[in-house]
Figure 1 (cartoon, helix red, strand yellow):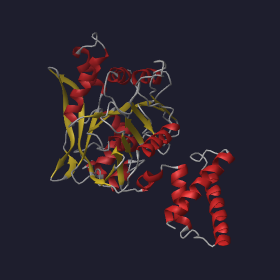
Figure 2 (cartoon, one colour; figure 1 turned 135 degrees about the horizontal axis):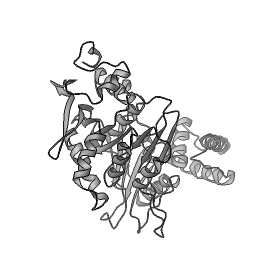
Figure 3 (tube, helix red, strand yellow; figure 1 turned 90 degrees about the vertical axis):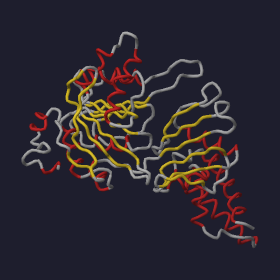
Figure 4 (tube, one colour; figure 1 turned 135 degrees about the vertical axis):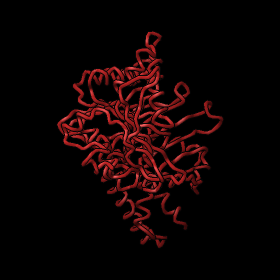
Length: 413
């Protein structure tokens, strides 16, 4: 009798016990563990009486049943692996993972039913739906990973699934400095900038580490200040004393009840924010963010861009999507006055994530271009102070923080 032949009846027995006990195996792991232990004890007792095969490795069988019943079955080992950054499924027989920035085709083979069951299980707690009228879904798993699913006939044949992990869940800039994402000097400068209330834009490509960097930067917000965040799906998971997190909601099957990111930004302004945080701006919500920042509420967000300069150019374009009455003559000077810093991060070919540029926005406009200054840049493979004009230098002085390039400013050099 194979090990699989031992596990299968045990798994069926555990599922019956779960139904009889009326527990939620995903939300009550301790109760599930007790039922698994009970099922294994019963099986071994019966095996001893009948002379059939007993459980060879109790711990391994317990873990595999727990994964199958209360977690994500064959995908769970990849979620538990700290080296795995992302998991995706092109078709049931092709399950990929990313380790160190390189993709690997795993040995895991599923069937169509297993794929659908896994998606249903992952969406159960999110309250989001997936059907022919809504063939895409963006959601967060209970453990914080971001899930995206697309189904036929948008895809040609199979369900396409992506699960993005936050491999580095840093809560502070010092942790990122130790991991090599930026230098201690750059980390000290960004910490002072956040404490001083500067408005920060974090830019980079997909999977560059924008959310990780933004979360770490927000760790420098004083505990006395209230943070209100708005995201498409929960990802930031801020560890702060006074924080309210909100996420968007898709429309119901009747087409009602949708809550957009624009709506959340406007609602956030009514919640006494001392910091407003937008997970990512990619459309007309950029206009509402600019209005909030221009009203004097310090804030931060991420944006997809290839450089700090392109991030500012994009932020000057996205608000135009809010309506014909929004013009460049309003947006460009508003961006210049509202954004203070742009931190650009990249993922190198090796998979390593690096801050490669920190730029300041001076508040001035030349023609239709927002003037910027380089504060930190990559030279000879190292992030160093570039000596540019620091926005709101007076705020740093109030914190007794030295400016880079000035006497006594070695901490940033």
